[in-house]
Image 1 (cartoon, rainbow, N blue to C red):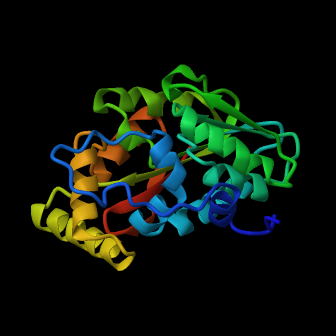
Image 2: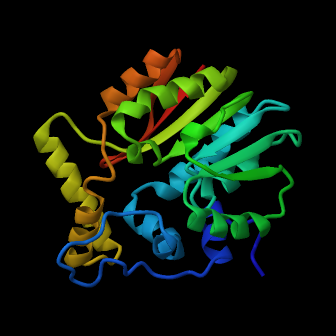
Image 3: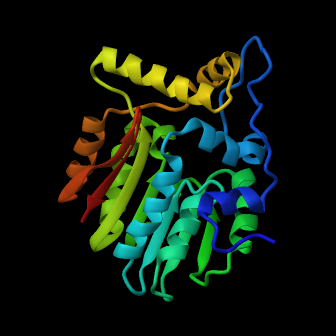
Length: 258
């Protein structure tokens, strides 16, 4: 039996097969570009917890923020919902039963498993899962919009427009949560934080071969911005307040208030 009181990350793992991430454990001449296919979906809970410092905290606090800012009768969006950890965190904290949580992801493999995760949850806030490019999904009547490690996979020239659409679709008083892997303008700090991130992965059992393989596969897929670039984009869209609420090495989460 899956404990309905467990954390969203635990529920996410327990609801699907808990496979260990060994995708990059073998030497290959030219690793394929990283994509959220069925192979990644099978190991995603293990992959993200062993790869992203602070992930558990970010997900849990996403739920608390949603509980504070969710307005009666409004929509909450989880853009790039993957297996639904942030969706579950919000569902467990929102008090208004007339809210709707919309989880969006363009990976059918991820959403198939996400549906299993959501089905095991006993909370009664309705959840709608949408398989689509988030740019094709209207943001309407929202009080909370979450992008946890999503914008970094979208072409840079499209990012301003996405944040603008989110701002336009938020109710006054609404919140956006944006979590990203970031880069640093100072090359010494950037190199240091990359090294510290790799040490984090080694401490979680990844070999140097796996770290190098993942880095090569994701190099031209995950494109990092600086925190200043994120803040410029957010304020340019019209948000009145914006700042970092959490950071560990080169992973950070920001909140923006309308």
